[in-house]
Amino acid sequence: MLDPEKLVVGQLYYMVRYEDAKLTRPVIGSYTYKGTADKNSKSHCFLIVGSDEHLFLEEQNLDAVVDLPGLLEELGDVLAKAKGKGHAS
Image 1 (spheres, helix red, strand yellow):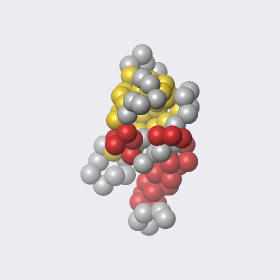
Image 2: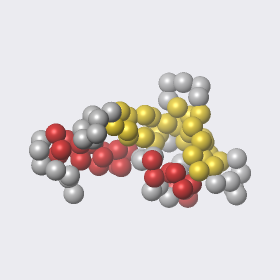
Image 3: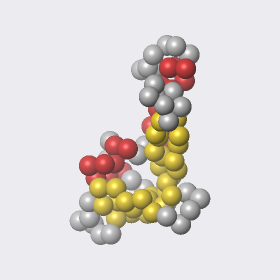
Image 4: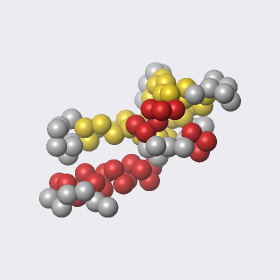
């Protein structure tokens, strides 16, 4: 899970979902972090890139979002699966 203290306003984050049960066909969403309502808020706001829509995630749901290194790691796992090597470590 991303550490909420390390989220940076204006930075891009990603959510990887899969359209198949074998987790080999990723669908990547891109989101710009907008921040929280106030310092005590546990709800984090992301702008969906390419739209005017927002995604709100509570801190316990931030594990669905990754930064660029996390995205590359996730895609490395997908590539390893596609090559028949199992998960990348």
